Image (cartoon, rainbow, N blue to C red; front, side, top):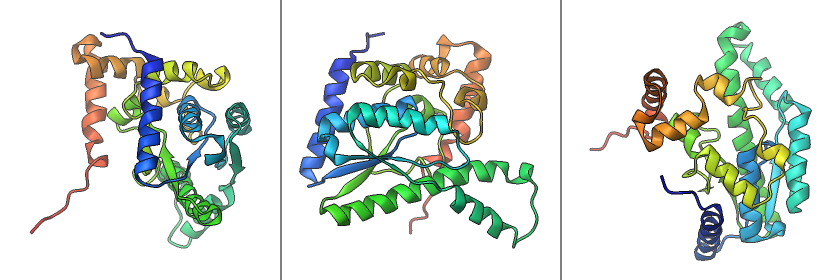
Length: 252
């Protein structure tokens, strides 16, 4: 397998961003900063490509750990980008209160819906802020996606939530490649090597998936390179989540 050249790939992504913005007369970018490596790397890429004055990071706590906000600030402080805190906890709680008008549900019954509601509220907020700041500052802001190749391969994202964005810069990089780019961009180590979690369910990504990201990366490169049972689990995740990528549309 060819050695990953983080410097070369980073410069290519930066050129990709600049070219797209120039061709489409765009101005800035808004992205959710979770305090994890993916959003940290994306923030670094856009800062290098557009300049810190054109990047807005947003923290979107919702019954979240305060540590995530602290780590997000490490990223914004290092790159010198604007950081907005928009707490959606009361919005989430209001939604849950309204749900009671339908009928009573227990926490186990609503658990999966609750987990997926949070990224959907977050994405709605990012798009609202993108439209708002586009109007206030007289230049068009896009919403950046922050999913990596391993997450996408197994469908580890929420339809209508973190799947929604205007530009994607790390979707073709595995977790280890994202970390390599992050090292080149000097993303704060506490953020870069933080154990991945969704900040929503109090579980790590790998706990929820039941597989390691390094195994997903190996499987993508060569399905026969991982243990058969692990390979079957990865294949099942991939196949069961294919519906997230395409909307079946009847054509006359």
